[in-house]
Image (cartoon, rainbow, N blue to C red; front, top):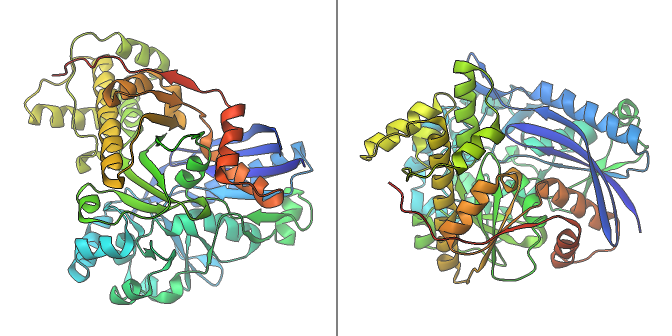
Length: 475
């Protein structure tokens, strides 16, 4: 059976629309459109330019249907935690960006009512200052009172296309308001926090149909009447984990892009004091699996560093920079990539240099050395997170799959293998879009297991292996 689908895959720095043809033995996926995405500064803080994003999505889907009139389904994934408050079918304001500084006051307000240990027990979610629960606590009371519902970003896109108001479960799990044991909204926690229950829509699971395209949307896209939007792992990491070609039980994964999500796929959550101390999270996965993982700041550190350099002196090409970083022979200092002072945009090189000098080391003397320090530090954090996940879940790990944009960064992959002391298998780069596509295809045709899906990915995608080398002593 041959199935034609389209995938909307939205990341924190760029988005894309893909079209794909899937049959029993092959996946043919083509990028139709790619567009920039990022924060915009408004008078009241940092937001997403959501209307520009909407226009890019519609144009990309129009092109997908022009290229392949046989498409029968659309799936949507995006970053987590951010949302739009809705009333009367319209947004009350642009969604805030998770890096907006307002979230700090939300943390204090939530913890004044529910202490951190109790919040972790109730949600299983690691502490990140921008989790949805904290954002809601920082909201204007007037806007909360006016709002009828809340839509996370992929659910907002689905609403534009279908008119249906839902919340897909894997993304719902990142809000801090879902019970990880039942997979349902945590009614007791929501009541305790004084949040309006009406804001949280009905949950749908990956593979379920959200609804058919609104007729005027179908006409604008020149899409077939009755074409459906299918729920996928709408948190992009949930889709990425589907696209990880794990074929053995002792594998860990790193989904590496703007963020590095490092962890294991489990059958049940691990909600312990040790898990909370290590800041590990239990997020929902496809087929009821648990994504037991830790967030690492990711390639944001390098891209934001390059952006600062380009603002000073013009274009910086990533390829030559990484080539120069690979030739650095003297030890470079490592630093804590998850230091909260690195979360906000702007002036990344100077902030990293300040962290390094603060710990008693000399700041890197060149751009190549700073890039190498960033990648060494990321590799150290990735390896540490893999070891911690293994210990917390009591599951041995002997191989790491690294997917996403980071799979193209050979130096990062090699350094991660070195630091972890085990092989790193890099690829596929488009694991998130693949996971999106394959969940749709499975919903449209014969239903196999996740293991069946991953075997197909392993057979169809190019995987590059990096074997560990002795680790150099760093400053």
